[in-house]
Amino acid sequence: MTFLELTEGPLWYVALVVFTVGVVWNIFSILAMRVRNDSAQPRKSPVGGGIKAIFLHMVPHGGFFSRTAYHVIVGYLFHFGLFALMLFGAAHVAFIEKWTGLSWTAMPRWGLIVAAEIAFGGLILMWIRRWTDPITRKISDRDDHIGTGLTMLAMLTGCFALGESSDMLRAIHMLSVELLMLYFPFSRLMHAFTFIFSRYFMGAAYGKRGYVP
Amino acid sequence: MIIRSFLLLLALTLGAMTLPAPAFTADDGPVSGVVPGESLGSTSDADLWRAVRAGQSATISIPDREAAVLIQSEGENWRNIRNGPISTIGGWLLIGVIVLICLYFAIRGRIRIEGGRSGILIPRFTQMQRVGHWFVAALFILLGLTGLTLLYGRYGLPYLIGKEGFAILASASLQAHNLFGPLFMASLIVLFFTFLKGNIISRVDIVWMAKLGGFFGGHASSRFYNFGEKNWFWMSISLGLILSFSGILLNFPGLMEDRYIQQLAHISHAISALIFIAVGLGHIYLGVFGVEGAVEGMTTGAVDANWAKEHHDLWYEEVMAEKAAESGGE
Image 1 (cartoon, rainbow over the protein chains, first blue to last red):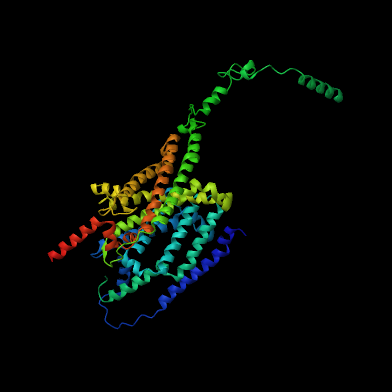
Image 2: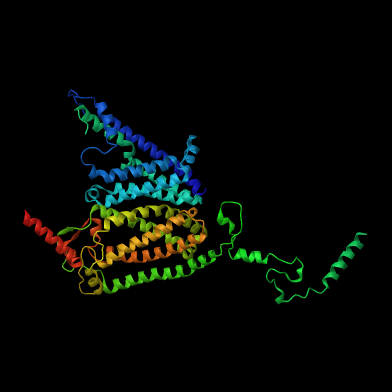
């Protein structure tokens, strides 16, 4: 068995199972948590408040945009770049098709490069902020840095494999992605799924009182 | 019948071998395309191939003008310069700088804050400046490592990781180098605008330079930035511009029809990068290891008051005067 076969075979299955079971278990745990019974008469719909909060918090609002502009802009750059790479990179589309049979139009090569520039720029700038902003530095712990580091590693090895010149580079990229998938369910990277629940919970709690901040 | 034919053929062959060869001498080589003996006609292809070797352009019917040149002769010059002086002098430059840094450290040691830490912090760099600095620094390291792998990797790495291993590493380095290049250009713009203020050369810098910055003893006054820092700033911008411009030409070879320009771009890219890395090593040493308390300005944004007094006394006095004016006005 070659290294590539190992990373695209057994290791991939292990990573996929841990990732899927871990994510589903986390979401189930959140949904199964009991919310304290609030018998107060609602002023407005909590469901409406929850849904409003999910979308409202996707855009900066309120009077302190200047203070949040950096991480809002940089955060969006990174996430959009990463999703474009993951879902529309030609090699990724081919990989998804191989495993699921589903396929869609991939980005052209120049699109891939632009998305990669944006994603890398965003991630580097976010990580720098974690180290240099005194408050963010204080509230960042090992988990934040490991999660960011593994994301960076997966992107970096993907960048190395851009030339599609070697099975070894492809295998290294696969391995780094698998490491990320193994770590994902046990870390704050879970925010990729749980942000919807946390926003909804907050929005519903406030929505019931008639105001969604 | 077959045997007789064979014997006849053998006799003719042996007879032909005994005939004298044409009496050509060394002087009878092709001259001006004329072949001696005129056995293949009055002209030969020699002139044609000579012209091809000299890089002469021919007439073609496709739009790609570069395809009209069969052998781009300057390519050999470029290869010799790249693998010769650039690699050799550049390599010695980097080794020399590392040796100098080690020697300086051995002689001078870490420059401590003489008065010790006062515990009073003075804000030095804003969050935006720190982000700009580390953004450039991160890309500088990524591009430097991948670039050095491409330029020097072949001289040592194949012995460590094998030829195939090096080929894989070189391919990975090339992809990363090409990808991070444009980000470096963006970071340079951020660097320029966030650090321009205070980096204009003034009279104080001449005195600082005359005292060699106090690095070999004595004290040299400076404002927010000293002359060395100002030089580093302008060097970063100017070398960064050369690297950016030449990098664009190398990343998008389709922009040029003339390969010669690409070769010049490559040479200027390599020279600028080597100087940038060599000076950068000095900057990293002084910023991180060599001068106690210096790196804090870039990590936390504040420096100790005693550090400011010792290294940037004129700036320290300005800050203190401002503080005094503020407290006096209250």
